[in-house]
Amino acid sequence: MTTPEDAPLHLDQIASATFRATDEADGRLRRLKDILGFGNHNIPARLAIARSLAVADPPAAPSGDAGMVIRGQNLFGTGTDAATWVSLVVEHAGRAPRDLVEFQAWVRAHWARGAAILGGLVDEAEGNSDEVWRLIAETAVPAASPAVAEAGAGPASPDAAHAVPVVLTVGEVGEDALTGSRVTWPLNGPGRSPHAAFMGGVGSGKTRTLAFMLRALRERTPVPLIAFDFKGDMTDDKFRLDRAFAATVLSPPHAPIPLDVLWLADRSPTGVTLAAQRLRDSLATLKGAGFGAVQKGLLGDAAERALRAHSPCRLADVRDALRQTYAQQGRREDGAVTTLDDLCRFDLFRPEQPPEAFFRQSWIIRLTADLPELVRVSVVTLLTDVLDRYLNSLPDAATDGAGNRALRIVCVIDEAHRILGNRLPGLSGLIRLSRSKGGAVMLISQGPDDFSGEEDEFLNEMGLVVAFRTNADARAVRRILGPGANLAMLENGQAWVKVGGEATARRVIAWR
Ligand SMILES: Nc1ncnc2c1ncn2[C@@H]1O[C@H](COP(=O)(O)OP(=O)(O)O)[C@@H](O)[C@H]1O
Ligand SMILES: [Mg+2]
Image 1: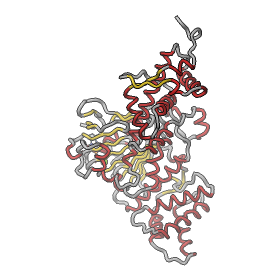
Image 2 (image 1 turned 180 degrees about the vertical axis):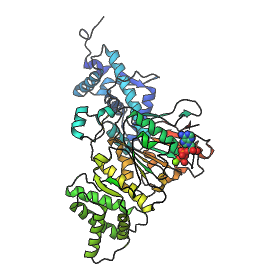
Image 3 (image 1 turned 120 degrees about the vertical axis):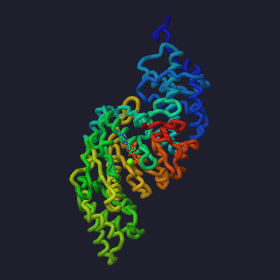
Image 4 (image 1 turned 30 degrees about the horizontal axis):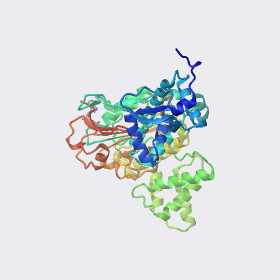
């Protein structure tokens, strides 16, 4: 019998040895190679092995047909390159390999696991190469050690203990209608998008299904909730979201929101200018606000002056600055001033808490039909905006050894058709960029086409799409769900479900 001591593995043995993953892994990496335009098969294989090495758990031995052969010297290069790769693989295993066969098995397992992770990213990116690179870059960021995360991020950062895998059953029943298997969504898994879209006609079970999943989420991890409730039913006995999240229910303007909504992450001149531009863009999205190019310019200047002069700054400070600008320039007051005037008539926000304190608690903001549209849209616009700016000011959320990301906040908008189509900069920022910061956005809407008006095509960013019965034209959803998904023919309680990373949509029994 030989031991590692009397038969050490030499680099030249590894250079001339053959390595292979599985046929399935090869298929995934061929796709990656075509999309990213690599000239040979070694590069995607290295990328896969590297990706798997970034996951602390040991990879499982893959099953299935053997894949094509790459020689060690091509897979790992020579000299220092080869030595580095071999060291990384050995370091991951925690010991020297018994022999060449074991080393080959380690490489095969990493290669196959990495290929599966990268394949999921390619699916998520729908084959868009920039997007694939962005996802690779995002998911490959190493997890900070808990001590570093705590020291660097302050109290608002979720500690690494909160990075637990959150795998949610899709609905109360959550069964594939054809196979009977359980349908789950790994919300915060590596390479996953934690955002979800629910849609369907009135009474089809959207709120019911999301409320069930949110309660399950909260049992898994103590994440706070910020929910916009346009219908006023989230606190019903049926849904009980206020109790599940220990949320404070606010009804502006009767109860103002105690948040410094014009908070600045950064008071440097550039920071103030950027925040002013963002506020200008947010306010200019308000329907019927009547902001032309000139008004937008003036509003941007006024916002900048108000933000510089006041801390905390209120909307009324911005309005006063705008008035002053108009007066100085001898301009007659117009729609822009009127919009700000209208907004300031309501006591929507009071700058009592900075975002760091506010977004650590759970809130259900009721914006029911009796409120003017301007109020409802402004509250969502300004709140999503400050949440987006706040999350982006934080370091990335911690991940556990398997790459599951800790969640900092879940933002839910029920009946989102009331605000979708307004192109809110904050909401689109949250959906595009908040995942690495531990933000999750869940949108409920009636018509699937509500989503397609957004320039960012929100549906592409969703880790989960759940579509109940609707007679509305469902072109946007069919693009995501595939041509077989007929939303008009669904039975009560059934939905077409697309979990990000899975090849096809499934018909799921969500509730009975
Ligand atoms: N927990 C529950 N148990 C039984 N029935 C429920 C429950 N929650 C909702 N429902 C019923 O399920 C249907 C779907 O409700 P809901 O989720 O509010 O629809 P949507 O949000 O799609 O308009 C309604 O008929 C509602 O009364
Ligand atoms: Mg509902």
